[in-house]
Length: 214
Image (cartoon, rainbow, N blue to C red; front, side, top):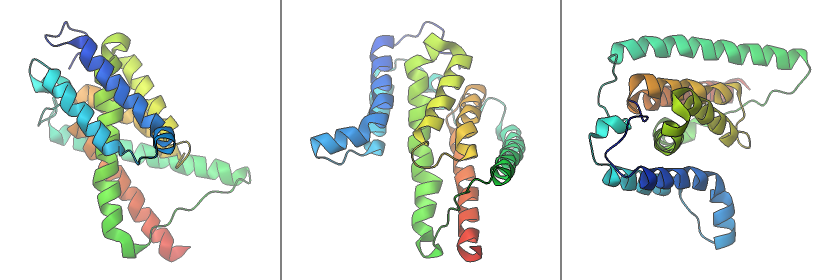
């Protein structure tokens, strides 16, 4: 999937719409507070995606809506396992450094009574909204200008920044770069979406264990 080729759809319109959705995602708290309305990021992302797809004049696969990744699913299952081990190692190293420095490590816990809510939110809602915003729409907005490497760097940085205020954990600081790379390599949004969902569900499992242990 290369956004550098001369497309047959309105580049300016789709790029502007996609960029506005990405920016709006960061401004939602300010918008809601000053306009007195609870703006939903999922609704905004959905409307933006619909607008981009409608304006697009070509194969939807070129936008990243392929059912099968370029290298096949088994290839990405193996890569996901390896990346998962690498991210886990990074988390452990960061935890060890924090303990050695005497820093307090926040322990996140999930009450099993609300398991269904956590499954829906962490396994479906959050990955879907964030992948649409930080991978799909961001790619439409700037990948043709920045190239693949520039897009991966920007996507990873914005994804990390979006979690600074809520959950600035090591996996969220590096995860965006890996997910953006997976999107570029696989040529489908389904790969980073599946990876994101799997990572969140693993994190949820740890949080439930923490509920009983701590």
